[in-house]
Image 1 (tube, rainbow, N blue to C red):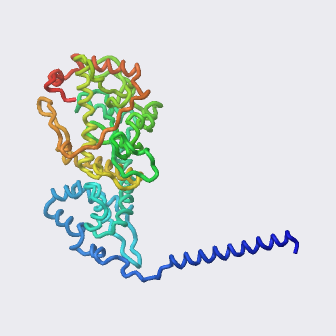
Image 2 (spheres, helix red, strand yellow):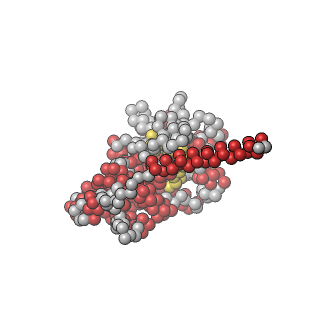
Length: 435
């Protein structure tokens, strides 16, 4: 036989043997993996199915009992009054409702909403919720993000409407002046870490200087501790300034599309001053963003200016404090993926704003107050823990000359007869300093 033909025949024989061996290996593996089919004993485990009875599960038993006999405990259970729960169920219910099938009944919208609110209020884990509401933990893990998304979709544009006209911004500034004696302030800005479980293959993206993984909630707050604008897209390693400089709000302020009011004189004055956000040293001083002087070698006038700015800015600390003390899941380490964690944070902010708009008296007791001499009475939220602050960014994001000029003028205004308040000198002494 021709040597070349013999060689080709041997190759074909080798390939055929190799294919046969591969087929035998695949057949063996399939046999090993094949499991004998066993019919499921239950489509729904009986003890889970019992939630549909009136006396089983917290939704059908405990909630009814609290609503009828102890409304204060009901409010503590869900962090809201019954009327607000009814509103949520009416408006959010259609978004989370599912149809019954031939195999099982859909979970009631009330159970989904209650379990979600209970998780937000306490941070309780899914297995515990499973026993409380007689719903499998896998089902709970599926519907909690969906309920949070439904709350955000239904309410966000209504209750977190960032102002877009000069008249809206001026109304906020008027309230800051009335409540906190800071004219031209259009909001207080700050950011906080929300701890999350380290996402897979994320490296150090979410790892912050406090040595845990987090996402960042950056927020602008009005004079009544209501959130005007939020950004929950920040990663744990980023600073306040980095997130703000990359945000849509900063972009709109710079290009004018957010329509801040034109500069005008402050009360009883005759020099035009721009409207501005109140921040801390994490942000760069700009004409549209004021912060206190650095606390080294301060003059008396600078100390008074710091007190006045910090007094107005304290409202954002209270907003974060009330938010985290009411929705204590934010004080735990969220176990969901980052996108679902952001949904949870946004839902908490929406619910906070609804409470501030509908039932402000229920939260006022948690806020810092001032006595008749303007000494601070710490709010209840300070006893419940708080979210972690962000690190300062010490790069090129520094103050500019125009911002310094505006702040110096505001300092002079606060120390003038037309801009001062009667108690400010007493409050900046070493005994009474509060900032």
